[in-house]
Image (cartoon, rainbow, N blue to C red; front, side):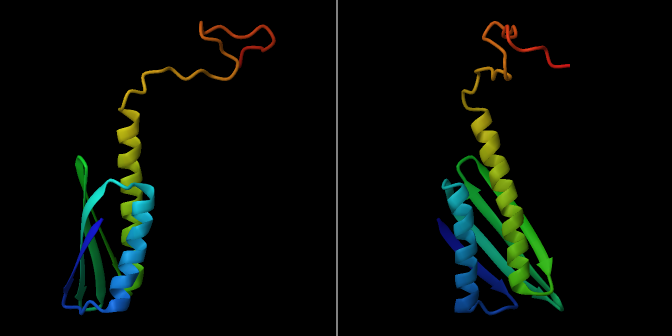
Length: 121
């Protein structure tokens, strides 16, 4: 995963870059088809803003977060991106050849209940 880090009105220091890299490793653990990430950190008066665009196989995901502390803004950004990436991963897996019907507990293939169980009401 290639991470491009840009700062608007803020200097990108090594601790800040290391923090972003360590947090994005969490996303890579959940979904490893991430190709490129572009992160923009900016400061507007008292607002610290972190935004990112993730390019994956078949989709682009964008999120942003605003907080008074840059590290908290990055944490909020990662949480939003994590939810979106997991949703995309789930959607992608559900559409790929899962045409088998799941059986409820106690049902046989014909859809009838076993002799020992009572119908659920």
